[in-house]
Amino acid sequence: MSTAQQVPDILSPEFSANPYSAYRVMRETAPLIWHEPTQSYIISRYEDVERVFKDKKSEFTTDNYNWQIEPVHGKTILQLSGREHAVRRALVAPAFRGSDLQEKFLPVIEQNSRALIDAFRHTGSADLVADYATRFPVNVIADMLGLDKADHLRFHRWYTSVIAFLGNLSGDPEVTAAGERTRVEFAEYMFPIIRERREKPGDDLLSALCAAEVDGVKMSDEDIKAFCSLLLAAGGETTDKAIASIFANLLLHPDQLAAVREDRSLIARAFAETLRYTPPVHMIMRQSATDVELSGGTIPADATVTCLIGAANRDENRYGDPDRFDIFREDLTSATAFSAAADHLAFALGRHFCVGALLAKAEVETGVDQLLDAMPDVRLAEGYDPVEQGVFTRGPQSLPVRFTPVAD
Image (cartoon, rainbow, N blue to C red; front, side, top):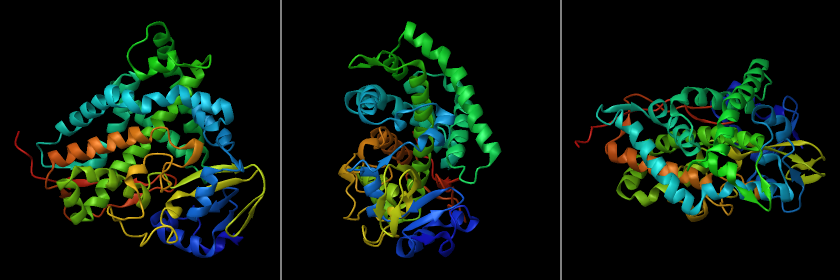
């Protein structure tokens, strides 16, 4: 096993500026690192991260979420296992696939995307992060749950503080306190609404969660509040970063942007390749249940394992020319990219595969399609180079573009 001195520390400014070169060194020379500041073992190779996520031998748990996310969300589905996890997942999953997604929520997605684009489609310029990506998924989730979109700024502040809490690897006490305050504020906001929906259900996801029952089990008010908190943070932050990243990648590869503009069925490929090349979430943690041997050594039982998705998704032993963005690559299957059979790791794998993957796909496909219609000659603002920021989650903080407005 290697020590962290040989590679840039994941908490260093050098790593934050460009994690990809550090990831390469880790994969090649230090595939298993004990990281003192986070008290965790860091793994970076595709085969190791895939094994942890698929966990066919029950060697890993999500017990790390007890301290990692429960302080901000309350107890969520991510912490559950076995039958308890299966039942809770069965309660929430129907809304995120099949007819519910197509019939109830796709119109919500299309309408929210169009409303945001209408604000800038005639101007010839936009910041695709500030004007669109940071707003779109949160607005969709608010509408799905039947919450008041006038509270958008509060939702955005809440999910930003939750993500900051999750990514607070250095243990900043102010970030911790803000995250814990969010849990209290969100509960105070949600509980009266949940009680009202139980008494007067509507045709929204929140009402469906209140009524859902599997094998005699219903969700408590606390269960529902925690799931809504998780949905807002996970669904907001990741789709926000994904949309910004897909456009940054395409704008930097004009030939691929032209291909997607011409054939919109390629949006799914562009999204899958973005999830591999610049995933919104760069690391996910698990807890070892037993001693486990991986590349580079043994992880002892009851240890936190930091799985570097951003590193594993660029493993040269898994992908050809992994540092090249290529929507036409043959070693990534877009048909399975949004299912538990995905051959990238951005949504995790196994029983904790992201329940919102198909919702994210629907949002990204709709958003990219509508944006390309509104901005057929979209290009980066002159002299602007998109810069990714973040360590735990990562994406462009700003993406100013110019285009010729399309006549109605």
